[in-house]
Length: 369
Ligand code: ATP
Image (cartoon, rainbow, N blue to C red):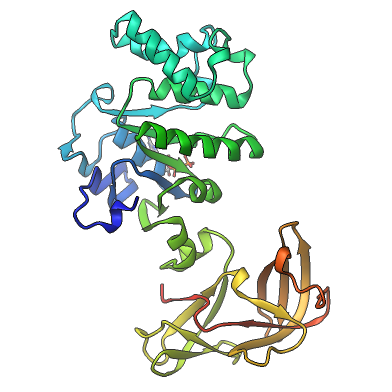
């Protein structure tokens, strides 16, 4: 499933140069974005970046100040929310407290005038889908937080919208339940064959669930890509910093060869990197490298192209991995991590030990912005 790599795939949801202003304030700035049918798409960004505004415009609660939003080729301007084939899932506290689970799920169908027999069938189907068959007669306060969340979900998909919008859907759940529910949401989306657009500020949540993620900042999209691409090949410092941990070697291009570029850092330390072909001599660049791509050892690895010496500053054992902070002799702090399953136990580095950090020229990305 990768319609975004298929030039013949038809766009499903299109934000076309969309701007939203509230008075003088620009919440969404000339933003274009395409979502494909059956995609699980995440809008990820810090508070205030405009992600909810984008979702609300798609739902029809706000109209763009400029630009168009198309669904399956149709311009949505002027179409009221209830006439759009789009439904917004609200958090579980929006359930009707005095109604049973089945009545909550049936509510929207009844309003729509669906015949009673069809409603019963649909409600039963939804209860099965969210695995709440035994809880049909309970009221929301007789359910756990996770169960309430599933009722909210069943209610929002009962009308079979084509697109489900979820604004921080799991915000009210604790960490463990959140993780479980993330997988449930993915299963449900697969089973229903719907297009999901989820807003979240939680990078792990976006990485877990989404086919693609749009990283937003100040009303603009910084990068749209699969979780793996976002993590492995961020195109800006902002994205590299926003998702996961990263080390940034700042410097100037000192010397360029066919495939490699030598960078001189501010303090004189030199590293050699690949994929900096576009940059000119003397240009300011940064080599962004993830902690797990950096090796820490007590001796200088014989074959390392890049090896920098320093001292172990912090060691944190996290169960699945160990994280090291190394203070290089030029003062820069480097974060390196090693899976404990593959940890070299005969080389137990600890606080204040002298240590080498080494990495391959192709282990990170060169960024210029
Ligand atoms: P959060 O995660 O905190 O909900 P967000 O990225 O979803 O943040 P939005 O809710 O889209 O952000 O808001 C984007 C910006 O637009 C914010 O600075 C917000 O204050 C502003 N904004 C949103 N709605 C309105 C409104 N009705 N009137 C004025 N300003 C608004």
